[in-house]
Length: 152
Image (tube, rainbow, N blue to C red; front, side):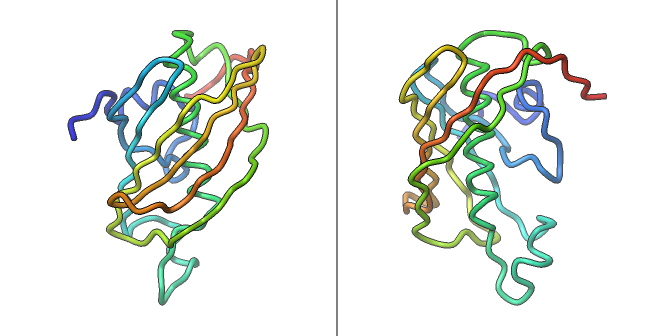
């Protein structure tokens, strides 16, 4: 899939940097409706050294983090605001469910769908899949805070 936003454009929306960046590209966006992003999972990920050395599995909390990062890109893209002037902070997760492990070589597809916006609080449904097979679902909330970022 050709990216709608490549990694350099994704970096404009997120304060996270490697090794804590979990989106490689965005392949689809409908403003204030949905976003689809991709995370290529490789054996080079630093968390695989300890989770687990003989059977590497991506930690579930990092799948949730990947969904949260996709939600931030979605929100900033939707509101057309300069990401350097504010942050979306993770505010909550509900109904998280994990259905299968994610291992090196998997291509994690991250789908975000808007549930509601109230003031500066965004609630989305996140779904992660690998080759069409459900990995994780969760409702995520984030709140926008006006804060100057220093990414230097």
